[in-house]
Image 1 (tube, one colour):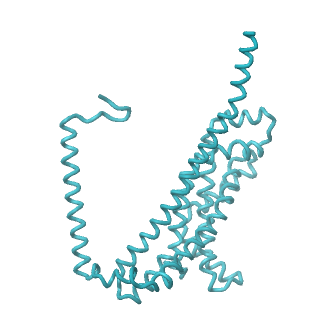
Image 2 (tube, helix red, strand yellow):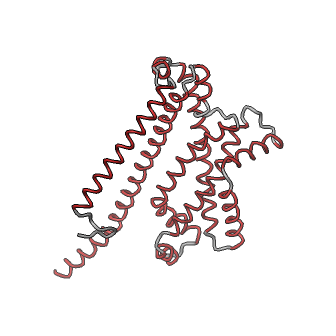
Image 3 (cartoon, rainbow, N blue to C red):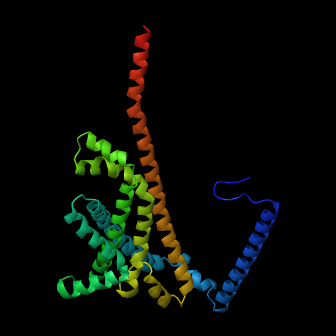
Length: 296
């Protein structure tokens, strides 16, 4: 028996796959045992290293929750600015006018090629030298600016690819109805492309949330990951415990973001199916009415 992509394994291949799986799990268990043993030898698994996150609320109110607030603030500002800017740049790259398409394409390729950390550091230097932004707010401004410049360029390519993935007949039909280029893009192509683009957009939003940690590493931005240093200094060098808790918070935030995006994608698909059924219903009724009239 064959599949479209591969041959279905026979009895020998299935036994061999079982052996490979057992060996892999055994190796994985040995590695986990070695890691845990090394952590235990360094006293990183001791109860006093982990108990502050359960018994001492000040760890959360003083370090983790304020850090999470700064992370979400920077991510939310970056998303609110980068999404419309990226959509505008993506539409600009699809323009029929060369004087629009070429400069927009140059801007997108330029900022997409620069590491986001370099954009943050450059933005911080610009704010320090040429603006009256105080040093208290400068890290936040620099982080948001770097994230917006980089991710708007990436989102622009996502938008362009999403629109180009639609059947050409969609645009031709809109033109046949007398719609202008802007109306076709706004009312026909973009609404249909949103469902196609949504998985890539969600991945980019998750990247934005995680990349806020770059500002804490070199710019002194008080985001979630940077709180590890304060926790470690005040609670007995519990680095592994702090990193573990912070990682779990990141996982929870990004899982919630992915869940909400999946719900949105599901609703969009259901809305499109309902609209399609509603649009075809009158045609069916007219045909049935015509048939019954002809019978009479």
